[in-house]
Length: 256
Ligand SMILES: [Zn+2]
Image (cartoon, rainbow, N blue to C red; front, side, top):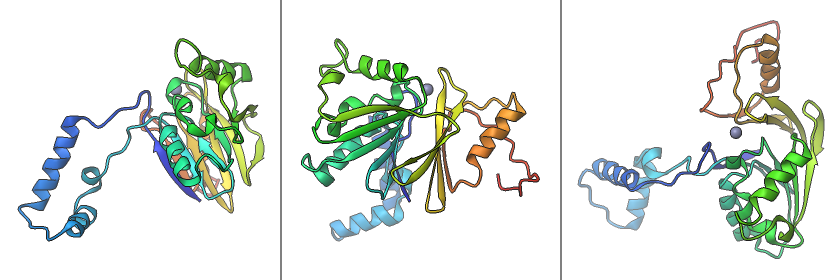
């Protein structure tokens, strides 16, 4: 299972600033230290092999969007501004002529988690199927998506999107089969509630758990959260909120 991070920032997307670019150039020049490069290839090799990751890359610019790769239908967590980049990649891979099925899993409908959808090209293309799964009331999800794509905020109304789009309500705590994955959602403390998702396939487990404010006020709630993460191969979690889950070695074989 391959996971791609198209957006990881919370609240609002940010762009690399001029000061940030200057810092990277300075760091690269210091690292090169007067060296002569014979050709383009030597420059590329220097960048790949000798510059550290923060100097040769950037990260964290777009808001939340993560996809699980390697299955017939798309599996995407959240629709932050990173969804625009995923949509562009899909257009490069498939073009507009090959219908695809997209399964989205919404943590919640705060704007930073759905603002990418109006800029997701497959939503405009007839023949595509888009299923938006979420645990909030369908009326809440519907209102959030409709408000985002309606006058005077956006020029294309939700009703004018070309794809076949369905909102699907999931019950937290129940297991569902979606595109060969077992999927279970979990309620997480957050303003207006958010939901984490646990995906299992071929003996591997990934938990997508964003905007989860664990407060440690209840041992029962903490244990339930630990159970949700238990033995996952990968947990995708925010750095914004303090997580004070107790990783206590217990009768549960200590695998927490
Ligand atoms: Zn939020």
